[in-house]
Amino acid sequence: MRYLLAASLALAPVVASAQAAPPPPPISVEPVAPGFAFLHGRGGNMLAFHGPDGSLLVDDDFTRDAERVAATMASLGPGPVRYVINSHWHGDHTGANALLASRGAVTIGHVNVRVRMSATQMIRGQAIPPEPEAMRPLLTYEGELTLQFNNEAISILHPARAHTDSDSIVWFPRANVLAMGDIFFNRFLPFLDVAGGGSIDGLIAAVNFALALADDRTIIIPGHGAVARKADLTAYRDMLVRLRTEIAAAMRRHRTLAQIKAARLADRYVTGLGWITPDQLVEAIYTSLGGRQARRPGS
Image 1 (cartoon, rainbow, N blue to C red):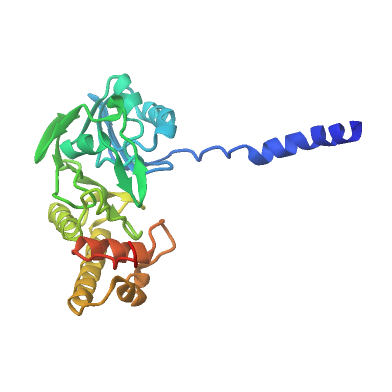
Image 2: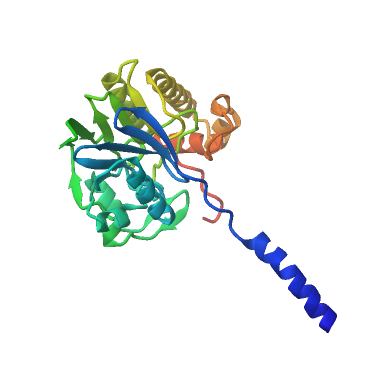
């Protein structure tokens, strides 16, 4: 018995060590323009803008990393976080809302961000419960909102039914910086959230709108992936258009979803990054275009 107890005690540190969660990676900070920094943690990309009026943040990672986001923002420059803009409602872009609001920030999002966060949602078959009131944006808008801050006239623009029905493009014209949220996955297969109001046609239209704002010097912050330029966004648009065209053509020929998946149309765009599979992207585009999966017998 004593031998068993001694063996258990000897193994305990090993077991505890094996079960301990690894520390989170640090939030990386990449200066991209005077007063602007690209932040990347475990969730969606973030854009920080700091100056004489204080700081502004586009998107704010997961809730579990809220304190780390706040500490990173404090390290960038003096002054509080005055505004947080949510590019859409997903939890990897809205997680620090409550913490930063409790410290004085005004959280901003399209009205559908608040609507979606106020009720149960479905993401890829998983039910997402409503967020508490403190997590929902305090200030909402519908078509367009202009914010005067740090000598910038910041345009917050809503494209209809793009990645979701709650998206915002955030445009800093003086600095020539464009934050796109999950409308743009740079060198990733994108997540098209059809259940959340997204559509392939709206996504393509939103990307074309952003391309019309940008020039070759524009710094573009995607929702996921590295900092980009107009050529990257153009390549992304071309991918979306090609897939939409090919899937729509297959649907007109009465191909089933299984047959369209078997054609491996999206495989050519796989980079090894991201978490959306080619089949998931093809199915999302198919569903967005009005396709329905065949019902199983007895269902």
